[in-house]
Image 1: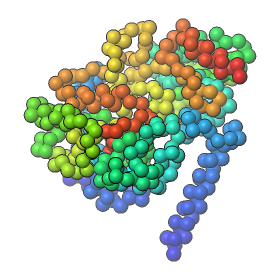
Image 2 (image 1 turned 120 degrees about the vertical axis):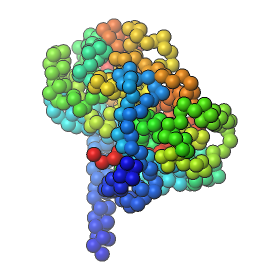
Image 3 (image 1 turned 30 degrees about the vertical axis):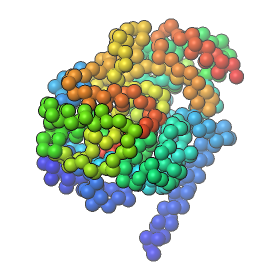
Image 4 (image 1 turned 30 degrees about the horizontal axis):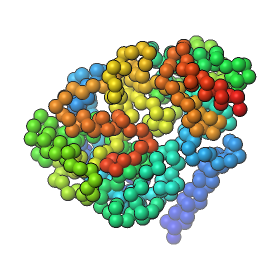
Length: 260
Length: 198
């Protein structure tokens, strides 16, 4: 299955990118029914994830530098503030220079959703959906879904308890997971395409209150697996950010849909 | 040689495209868009009459903007009610200086015919109101600009936040409310009147 997918993905016509680059930079994931940590009232038995490819590693400073050189409208100081707040790429020494605080092999951070979306778009790719990201991140080195293993959960949580003022490690230091994807945990937070769909209300008292009709339809999402703190923190983080926000730990990677 | 010619040609086309894009951005008011304008996003909108135009054409007039979808049973009719309630608080002259734009989060189903149906049913005035759909790939971006969150449900409905956003004539967000329905938010109405007074 995985091999078929990888071959299929290589057949995607790529604008300006050698097909081989797709094969080495992305891992193919078969998809299928997946039970998210989020309780979807409309999909209680799980969500169906279509086959897709996901970048093996987060996008690095070097990658992003090449992008802003090619697309000057995304350079710090030039980008429209509606797309990126003032702290966008503020750790670089200049609009097109990285400097000591942003080594080339570190994951790029201080990027907004709009900028991440534009980067992936420039490759003909897209940001992964939350479900795709969570599905890929459920795997450990040997198991496709290690989420019920308390030891695995502890390992992930250990990262979150690390102080965030320590310099980021470079990408690719961690062993690939069962899908061949690295650094989903333990390095940076990551944008998803539908970060703005994660309607987790900070104040659940608002649910169903007609005077504060914030949500149309099913109301805010709740968590189905309250033991999975690490993933819940991801959701809370993504649901608290706006599209122009940038933070010291928020990076991203891109995804491709398999051709239908 | 041929490759070099082609790449040169590509560059010419790229330059032409940039020039065309820039002229579009400059054309509306004869001056560049402010950097904090939501119209920095290129966004083709197709309205209830089937007309497709970049939303930068909305420049020049303050607009009350929100997002909705026509098959919504619950909140979305309230969003139209909100617009009507705000209009009701304005003088005829003020009404003439404000536009109301409802952007669909469900462009796959919100064809011009579907938009037209709601437009007619709710008796909206084409001089002020526009119901419009963006291309599917742009829905996330416009929602992010307006600070509206949504999720498509398995049954095709949407779970979404409801907000009314007031844009000034240059597309800058000057007011916002999450109070929708026939009883408008007084602070938001005051902001609309102020925008309409200019």
